[in-house]
Image (cartoon, rainbow, N blue to C red):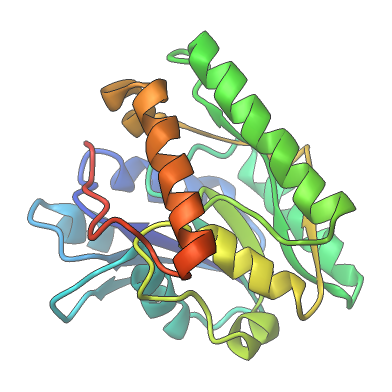
Length: 238
C-alpha cells in the first residue's frame, strides 16, 4: 500500500478536489492523509469529507517538515508519497505504479520527478525556471547521487524515512532538499523525468520570479553556511 501525505495550510480552495480526484482515479491500495498546519479556514472540514485521515497540528510553531512528519506518523503504507495540496497528477494510477516500480530495486529509497506550472497559467518564466530546477534535480540525483527534490512530489520507502528520522522540523525552507540529500546517504534516489506533476506556481506569480529566485538563493547559501533557515516563517500565498 502507498500512503499519500498532503501537508496543508489554508488550502480550503484546492484540497477537496486534489484529494477527491486521487480517491476517484487511484485504484492501487492507498490511503490519503491530510496533515493540517493550523489552518484558520475550512481546510480541516473540507479534507475531512474526502481524505482517509486528517491530522491536525498541535503546537505553537509549524513547518512543512513538521506537517509531513505528522502525516507520516499516521501512515500504514510500505511507501509514502508526499505531495502539495495544489498538485495535479495526470493519470494518478499510471503515475504511482511507475513510481513504485523503481522500488523493485532494493537499493532505491526515494523517487522524485519534474515540477511544472499548470498549462493554462504557465508563463515563460515558469518554463525557464522550473526547467532549470528540473535539470539540476535530475543531475543531483541521477549523476552526482546527492539527493535533491521538491516537496511537490517525493515518494519514499517507509523504512528509509524512519531510518533518517524524517524531515527536519526546524527548517522553514530547504527541508525537502535536505530530506532527499539525507535519503541519498542511505540508498539510491532517482529523478524520473516521466513523473511530472503540475501546480499553480502561486508564489512565483504573486511576488515575481526575480524576487523568488533571490529568496531561494539567499536561503540556499544561508543553509549551506549555517545549517539552518534564514526565514522565520514561510507565509502561505493563497
